Image (cartoon, rainbow, N blue to C red):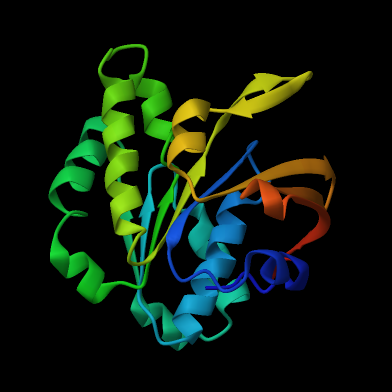
Length: 208
């Protein structure tokens, strides 16, 4: 899969497998970049499973990024609103061999949103998230997996949730920042030897 962003694709190449984590503040472009990767898989006649844990407003953006509405027949969406349900889906649905037979890309947007809500009530939440990462990592040995992650912090900066887990399990890490209206800064943090910083324009058709 590729993003359609020339410099990014030249750096990371055509990603055939591996776990890619995209993190950043709200509206920084995490979902948009995920959809750009999804678009390349759809255009290659692949099938995508998109698991949404936040909202489905991104659906309105899909036609601008995918272009060919017929390709959406290959795009399946599953909505989750509870961290325990997310855990059940991961342990019961995503581990089935049929998943790898049917799909060529798995996207979870966001993997940490419901974890953030559950963490204060459930001391096991961190262990559950760790096991979810382990399963996604195993899936990613066969097909690409994209997981977006929320952040915490304020005016002095932010860091991704469950940072230690992400850095351990992820094969690729991309950070997105809002620089100003219509401008996003993309940083490739992992693999470290591929480190690169790009300033991109946010358009209806995606990051350019």
